[in-house]
Length: 181
Image (cartoon, rainbow, N blue to C red; front, side, top):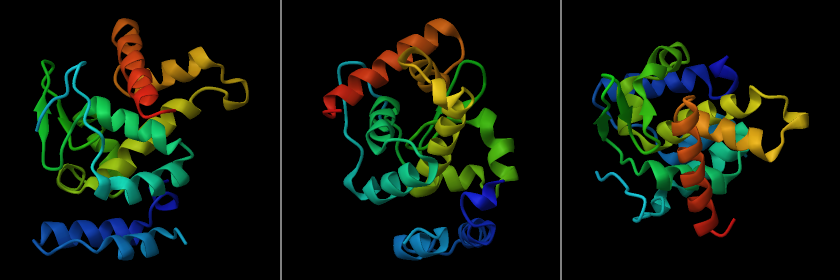
């Protein structure tokens, strides 16, 4: 349940503020409430995640047990920006910094999120994107997770189609290496 990941009240309050046109809470307020003490990128161009996202990346890494450097690598590969949507051939759209596919919106909405929240707020986008990545990784038996299975899970963040999956995983691996991991 999403309330165990964020606070249901926090998501509800944040969504209400955004929908009502008011400013969302500060990062400090978000940390307290969480209970924690447009350009597309080509293969040859890598943009590091924005420095102001670092707090959210760290929070998401701790909360969802995913290496922060892996989140940064995915952000580099995805290349999304706050407020950005990218249309796909299949009619779906990729949303915000982690380019979360709109196919996940019903699941995100059940957990208190919204299209506007993940499009317009980097921290929410990073948390939901990391949660989706974590779900893919934990679909496998984590105790017996080998390198190949791990990278398949990372590729699943993008696509379960084998060819697209392996290409994406390779791009993330290359970005991760560029970050020094």
